[in-house]
Length: 377
Image 1 (cartoon, one colour):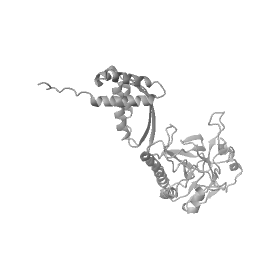
Image 2 (spheres, rainbow, N blue to C red):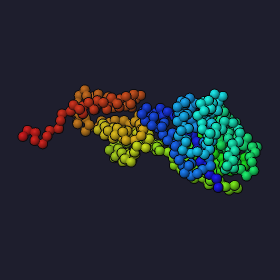
Image 3 (tube, rainbow, N blue to C red):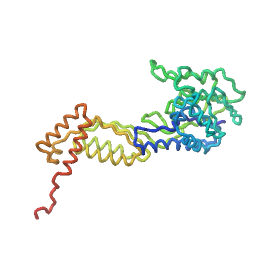
Image 4 (spheres, one colour):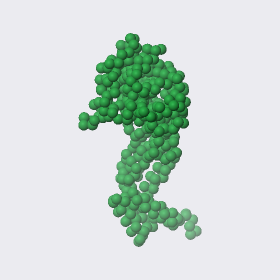
């Protein structure tokens, strides 16, 4: 029995520009931590090799420091690492891969699969057939050569590729970097390790996407895993999923029309912790008092979770009669609040809502204090 760890789409150097610089830096750092976790998993399971099916890097221009940091993160596993260029880090004439070679950054146990040359792992009798991308986009199936490639007798045949299995997308979409869905069969592969799809996905019993080991987007696609592949000659592989990701990305859309809806949303968010990355899309209509309560709760939540992306563009403020009474808003002030309420229905809705909230907050600060129990005694 031979064992491989299949991973892909590390996207080292990803910057997460949609979040604050502080949160983005931690999310960027977590990608190195995922590689450390992969090394520990591989060492603990005593695998014969780690296959990285493309997009090791998020861009060609990552710094030299990032390159050295990555190979240091890989040091926890001393067996073979096979790294394949994908569409984000294609093996161009001048690329991140040529810089790695110029720097001498990769240790001896790391194989850079930069051309269509089989990699023979003699100690485990495994032949890996790589299909590196040498440009970002191609419409040719770069795995075709697997069909005619020879391998030593008694060796397991493993394909390593990055691209889109044909037929997964809608019929009218011409996907780039295509891969034939039956490539494992036509090339007599024992296993085909794929990258590009960021979630773990089974195509057939011998063909799998591993997904990214550290979740990086708000999509329920079973990301954040690595695949442990156990192989024996003449048998279908045994593939098991192993959780690697530190962060959980959660997207919530909620319609709010009163205190009950707000309570239900806040109860749902109560268990969110420091490893959560949240996306909240809120719509509906709340009173000024209720909106302010929601604001305070979300400000506290932002200090608790790892990062939060908040969209309140479709959530309007409707000052209630109680709001106006509590704010002592009469005459010109009441008229201004009403105008801002109406403006929320136009192109400046977000600006009008923010102005209404600021005015409401100022009025709340200046309203008369409630009388004490012994007032007038």
